[in-house]
Amino acid sequence: MYEQRSVRSLRTVSGPLEAARVRGPVLAHEHLALDLSRGGDPTAVLDGRHRPAVTAELAALREEFGLSLVVELTCRGMGRDAAALAGISRGSGVAVVAGTGWYYERFHPVEAAAAGADELAGKLVREIEYGIGGTGVHPGVIGEAGSHGDVPGAQEARTLTAAAYAARSTGLSLATHAQLGRGGPAQLELLTGAGLEPHRVSIGHQDLTDDSGVHRELAAEGAYVAFDTVGKENYRSDGERLRLLLALLEAGHADRVLLSCDISRYGYLTSEGGTGYGHLFRSFLPRLRAAGADDALIDLLTRRNPLRFLTGGTNDDEEL
Image 1 (cartoon, rainbow, N blue to C red):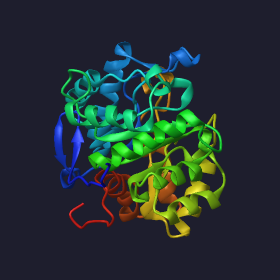
Image 2 (cartoon, rainbow, N blue to C red; image 1 turned 30 degrees about the horizontal axis):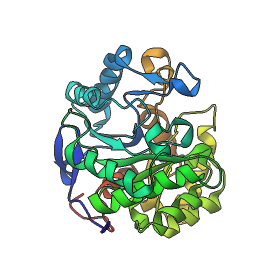
Image 3 (tube, rainbow, N blue to C red; image 1 turned 90 degrees about the vertical axis):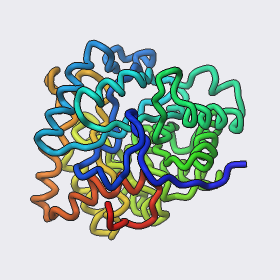
């Protein structure tokens, strides 16, 4: 039923965009509009009150660092706002890719508990093909499709399987949420068992686990390893992140790394005193350069890898 398909261009909230036209860096896992407050944290919100600040941050990063694209992984049940994403993209001049799928079980809407994998996959395929609600915005990635713990629960296994089926059917790639970095190998085993090729998968939050062996295992299988909570020092210091990243690079897996900051509450915005979406560029990448990374490696990590992930490419195409 679900044949493997591929895509040639990016689906942004403003329409198709050829990957080769993206000449600046990409933030591979961010949130621009979300509401996770029903999980018990009233600060886990980015809504209309914060929209001007979010837009201004992205516009400033476009001017200072050439930021070209944000992969926005707020999916179903996370307070996704497709119309807001389109407005932020227009206002900032930065392209935005919207997501679909289901987060981990704590945030699943009723639909995720009441249907099988095939029915759930059909919901995603329809949304990808016909748009999110009446907004005219089409998702360009599946994610962040989530689980918690070392092995997905039964309901999470269904939503992840549905996400894999939808990815195969539509040609979109799939980014996961691995709670606190745990369960990445089990996620990849489930997704590939559902027929999705590993190079179409990014395993999320791997900078939150200090197991370099897991990082190498995922990369060797062909999946992308997301170091996507850069700057969240309350979880892990950036010094530790840098050490783990260098170990993965030294193991020969530079082409499997994605980088981002995962801004997921308003307190992380620079206007609120936080490190903001630009922490990757202003703080972490300079430290990586000081450790020996050259311009070509930085471009690979921040532009060519995320573009290859989104389009499902198997090689680092010259036109990127």
